[in-house]
Length: 257
Figure (cartoon, rainbow, N blue to C red):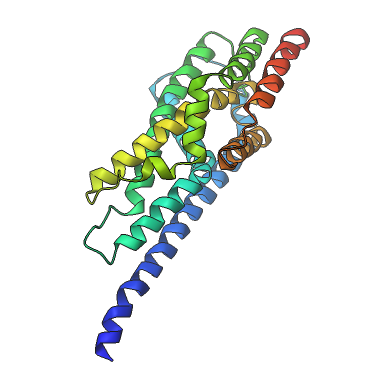
């Protein structure tokens, strides 16, 4: 009886670990979206002051906003790779070939998008100083809006996009054999995976400047597109269709706006 208890205990602990992991990720994403919703609701009042030159405080606030937004948008789209990593981690928990906990893998992934957030905040500051963004953080230049749409559409047709998208759609082969027991192994693998994800989505994220960085519906639409694109089977790609739509929208944007 004691032996049975000892045998079943690790599996129970792994079950609780998995529950805690997914609960943490869900809570993190929900809190991020609540933050974005509250910020979007309060933005009109803050925008009355108009555009001004950024200072360090402005950059820090926008960096925090972008970081939280990337967590809310991109963590849900990494569900396939997180499930694969978690499955391997749970199976290795009872063997001598343990691998780093999934939290470290997710941390590495988040680090990549936090770095992107710093760059996005810097770009936003430059655009504000040039008068190319409105007080609601929407492109006030037809050339900027059209240029981003056309660039995003053209990038959809490049081999770099195809390679990164194939990785995101089928990460199992890449992840296999790259697991390690150390915390740094998990973080490094998360960073590598995040880099592929960034290569797949960075220009799509730039479209936030077209529809509005604080336009909640636009944020949801972009998140849904990325989620759908990455979770499709690797045999199905809609890059050609999306490219035509983005390039066409960019041309229309240039003519109308």
